[in-house]
Length: 221
Ligand code: CMP
Image (tube, rainbow, N blue to C red):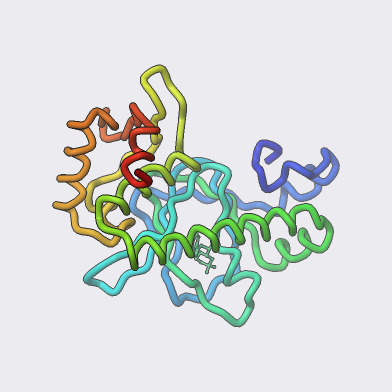
């Protein structure tokens, strides 16, 4: 647990004390952890794998966030006892999650103000992102939205390698459309344009950013 941002403030003793509270649960790729509107009394921390947070109405879907190792989710329904899940969660890869029950989570927060602050900070970061997403969806054109999505993905999923900045996620064009409120054909076309301009490359379904300043310049000329 020590390697998780969530617990970085805890000492060895505390870690030893809380470790038994976590259950480990494995999920196949494409499995739902929970659905929007369900009641929930568990918080999840990703040990390995990738999880998308989304809302849908059967016809269309909007992806709100994609989480990976070290990220947590499900804190909203857990902290707001009388509220249901605000979105659904589904694995994009085979994943292993640490599960913490409400009672244990609350007693952990009571014991450790550092964890409490960490969670609040993360929740506020997510609110900022959500505000950006609302603005993007309302006022920006499709190309700008897609470029901004690519730049934003580098923050949580970026990996520097020899060829550039790799986004360490395999996303389909449909998933990228669901993140930007566009359609698959638009994503395909714009990704092709960006490749032709040598701003990005696609390698084994992952995006490599070859020219990050070029990308930034596209949206803030
Ligand atoms: P909860 O409402 O319990 O279940 C869905 C979870 O998705 C929620 O807790 C948060 O952990 C997470 N979540 C909901 N909305 C967003 C968002 N806009 N950005 C990032 N994460 C979110």
